[in-house]
Image 1 (spheres, rainbow, N blue to C red):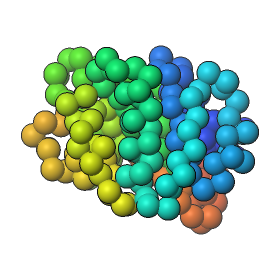
Image 2 (cartoon, one colour; image 1 turned 120 degrees about the vertical axis):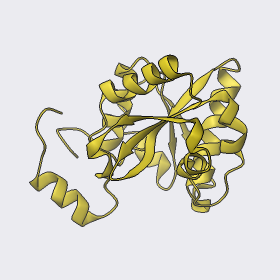
Image 3 (cartoon, rainbow, N blue to C red; image 1 turned 135 degrees about the vertical axis):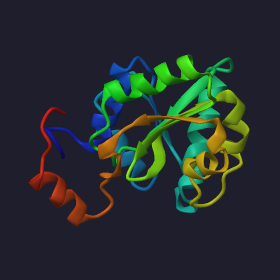
Image 4 (cartoon, helix red, strand yellow; image 1 turned 180 degrees about the horizontal axis):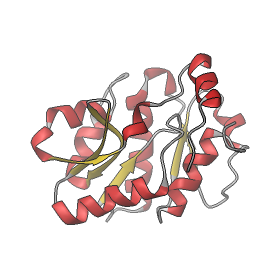
Length: 176
């Protein structure tokens, strides 16, 4: 829980408020987590191959997106363990896409580029080809000349451990 909601629901709410139709890919304990999602318009998929790693979740979600919306031009990939993602950030990614014409728009933080990141449909095949624990950052790194960025200084705050969660709770930023 963070700011009165789960990190998963925060991500869903941010994505919905940005005008997207979120597709949530769940892995381990997917059935339990699915019951906690408060937005009933969210498409939820349980990735049965979650043990493979991040690539399996990307493939699962992207395959569903293309199936339900074959003419989609781009998608934003995000993770729910970045609690400081905002609706404004997601809108900025889409705006940069329209303004720059670049096929990848990545968030920039801690001398790195990563998620949330927008990928044009021309990168759907490479995303679908990812394997194991390789994520979208690998595609960003291989195509830096095709990437525009949006600054997201708190993007390096992600919650992977109990200690990181405790630090988040003890240093709650304002203005979220």
